[in-house]
Structures are given as C-alpha cells and as structure tokens.
Image 1 (cartoon, protein in one colour):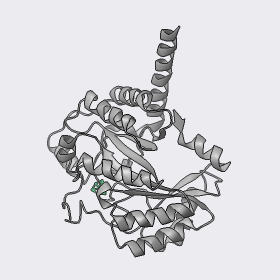
Image 2 (image 1 turned 45 degrees about the vertical axis):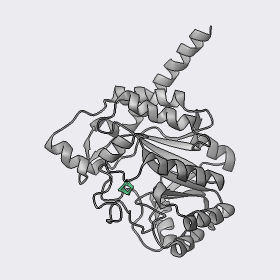
Image 3 (image 1 turned 45 degrees about the horizontal axis):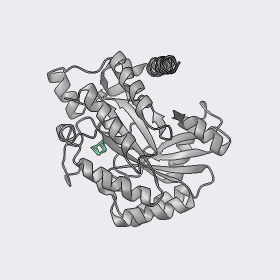
Length: 300
Ligand code: SF4
C-alpha cells in the first residue's frame, strides 16, 4: 500500500500540506441542469465544508495557509478545489483562476474535484495546458460502480460516463483520484467490494483512491430520510473490515489518499464513531497487519 504522505515527502523532500480553496463554481446536480436535489448525501457546502470563503484567490491561499500554521511548518502546498463541481463554469475564467494558482511558487499540485460529466473537450484542453505547468489531479466522486445505487442517491450520471472521463483524462497524462463511499443505502458488503474490484481491474486505472464511510449530515436528503426513519449504518467493525479488505485488493501502485473521511462534525447526525478518526485508522491498520500475518502464515 502506498501512502500519499510518504510519496509526497519522497518527491518534494518535505511534507506537503493540502489547502482547501473555493472556485465559486456550483454543481449541475444542484442548480437544475441535471437536478435540483443534488446527491442525497451532499451537504449545503457541496461536500467541501473546509474550503475558504469565495473571494480573491491569493487572499484565499494566504488565509488557508494561516489556518494550518500551527499544524505545520510546510512551505509548499497542494491547492485543492473540493466543494461543488470545479470544472462547471466558463472555461476561460476557470483557466485564469487555476493558472494563477498553479504558477505560484508555494503550490506544487493543483487538485480539482469535479464530476465526470463536466469534462468537455474545452475543459480537457484547459487541464492539459495546466498539467504542462505542474501536475494536475482530477478527483471524481464515483462513490459506487452500481448504477442502481447511484440512481438511489441521485448521483445523476451512469458508470459509462465515469469510464469515458477516466480514459480521456488518462490519455492526457492527468492523474485521477476516485472517491468511494461505503455504506450507501441498499448496498451489501459484496456490492462495495465489487466497486473496489472493478476499480482495481480498470486499465488504465485511477492513480489514487479516497475511501469514506457514508456520513449522514444535517441539511441533506439522506439526513431527512434518516431522521424520519433511521436505517442501519455500517458499524466501525464493518467499515474497517471492508476498508482493510479493499486495500488488500487494490493494486500496489494505486495510492491511498484517504481511508476515512474528515466529515463536518457540526452537522453530522450519524454514525458517531466516524468522529474518532484515529481509532478508525488504527483499527484498519490492525486489520491490515492481521491480513499480512495470515498470508505470511499461508505462504509458510
Ligand atoms: S456532484 Fe458533488 S457537489 Fe454536486 S450534488 Fe453531488 S456531491 Fe454535491
């Protein structure tokens, strides 16, 4: 398993921190182009609660650096546009914004969260140009390979759209990171592992993956459904089992960017155990160690 922090340290010779920024884009799954409801798990902040307030991008960067000053002495950063759909807008305006960011000395990577159905030819051309300046990562919220689940949570696009976007991005040499959520309504453990096996078998496959437990948040459609009629969620044991199994399935070269989410605690309804990130990570590590011991014993 390759850990992102180790790879970055090796590549840049120091710890590289991520700063969350705001492009000002909305999302076609929320503004009516695809739907008005959005994905049923998505919060009002567009699944990016830690981003800076919109505004001048250099000010956003300086403020974001200031917020993490007590956590790190890092001098270089990944500029992460997480919330909403950051390729959904006027391409000329977006390119000016992203170019300004990527040309800064203190930014080493530009990471853009978006939807696979918001990557038209003009957007891809922009990404190709930006990727020539410094590495560009595209983060796609797939969440599940199952179209039936995707429809249930109102993701608003089908698996084939994701595959097409992945292929086109990879053909341009752009790194792709896929987000997967475990515990989506109606999914079994086997359904979740199928998503992982599917991603592991893709060629070209994603460069990285982010795993997360489904967080039920206040102000979301799922939050409303849950409060009306609470449904079962994965326990810490179940989630960490699936996460450890997933990590053992994924190819060695795929980088694990996240093994558990950083959900916004102030609007979290359930499950409560996700608040204890350290415990989640330690439990996954323990299970991974146990797996290695088993395979080692088997080999003996
Ligand atoms: S695509 Fe992203 S921003 Fe849009 S509704 Fe879904 S999770 Fe939210």
